[in-house]
Length: 163
View (tube, rainbow, N blue to C red):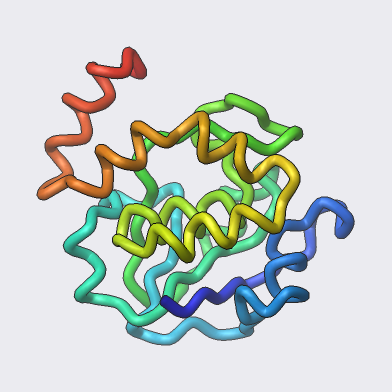
């Protein structure tokens, strides 16, 4: 699956996971989003599920500061918007906070849910803490990758005491 990032350059460049993915050729830095791109949007009404794979050819991560996320995501973007189901951050800045993922974590989780598990894990390998994200969320990611509809998410969250 093709990965793209739209970067707002709002965070510390040394900690920017999107810049690192671009540097290593794992994602492409873009200025405009195509219609068949799936935009990871934490404010979307729809949650990413495995059957979304047939709708898209690219996953787009919006790289911005969490402090400015509401401004960044208020812009009009082309593409299919989806939020991720709840996951715990494995990065050192937001460790174990629910849904405070880096761009790399969000793209990796999307790949995993859509059935690109090997590509998902390869992406995490580029980060010292990448294994931590996977270890914290392995069971949830496995469950999410089997979803047939969004309604099933609530029962998974109850099973894991996240609601």
